[in-house]
Length: 247
Ligand SMILES: C[S@@+](CC[C@H](N)C(=O)[O-])C[C@H]1O[C@@H](n2cnc3c(N)ncnc32)[C@H](O)[C@@H]1O
Image (cartoon, rainbow, N blue to C red; front, top):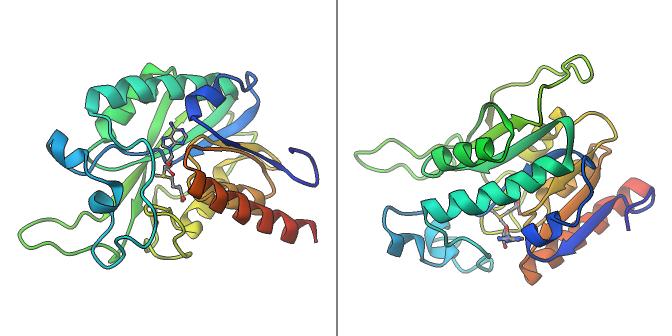
């Protein structure tokens, strides 16, 4: 359903397959957090289960592994260019793309964004503050990135917000329901780029953090997730939020 009472549509399927069925220029923004396919310098390191790659020892095995995190750089570039091109088609002119990525995959992601036809507008930094391990002899891996782009030029008069370029949010703020779930507070802050009463698309919604932020901000939401378990978590979270909003 996608109406006043239930302002969201969820698909449990492969993102690319669903994106191909969505109408042209039907959303205001794509805000997403795809599998990074990161986590090591060698193919063997990248092929490890997501829990081993991304979760520290204390939290390991508490949440299930997720799908799609296996591509090498070239495979990622080809694949991301495809879904980003579909997202570009589905976004209204002047609409925004925000896609998370880490330092290792940042160059590949910015290439893919441009290959897909988006106008690359910049990088927003997620500063994880002290919420990451100190490592002897190394800089802390303290940030992740949001690649920001638009479909053509942005009409800054239409939605004249003034937003920071760095968001300092501890990774655990907001209660994690996915192995690599983003803090709810962070997603709420990013949502400010979307004009009022818009529609937000997340083709890799995981536990639905983007959807919760979208609904709380008064937007409609379209979400896609391949994993059955995480799809169920997202469905339950969005149902709870929309019941509170409707009450
Ligand atoms: C990084 S996680 C998103 C986490 C989310 N931001 C949250 O806060 O819960 C990426 C998600 O994309 C899903 N995924 C991977 N490949 C996919 C595909 N081809 N189609 C749809 N979902 C996919 C994974 O199962 C995973 O849950």
